[in-house]
View (cartoon, rainbow, N blue to C red):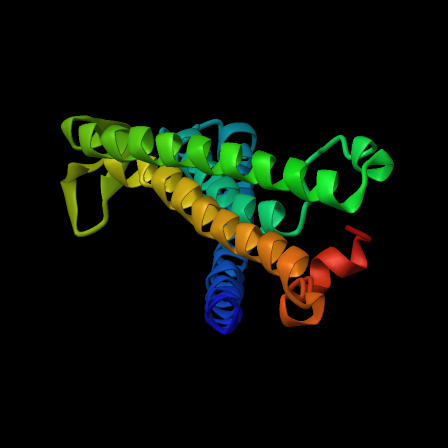
Length: 193
């Protein structure tokens, strides 16, 4: 059990660090998206000269923002879920149900990660319609860099899934205090999540 405790602690610290970076980038992308959309409103209605790229740029930022925030939501149980059945089950049945659901989720995330990596690779064949590269204005951004958000999201969620599996197994077969739930980020705590 000592190996599982150490592996869980390491993975929990790794996830805490990586998800904190993801949350900060998500806020940055949200702020950037807001500024871009506001600039488009000013240009379109204030100067009567709509810019060609803000909608596509905001959409790309929204995809990345969602992909970076989803693993945190998964880790802390912030997705919508039905958990009233667990209240009526014995601890053993609750463990079996949780384990089965985490295994199924892990298998789905493995398949989604594989599909997302393939989609990312195919994205190098297409360019964005309006977003040009700043260092070479004649070249447009490859869609692959937008599509990279999905493998990042699904692989991050898969790593979180492994942590959740380890915690579930460790709390059932070992000491629950050796497998504590990670502290929620302040923003989630303030929202009552």
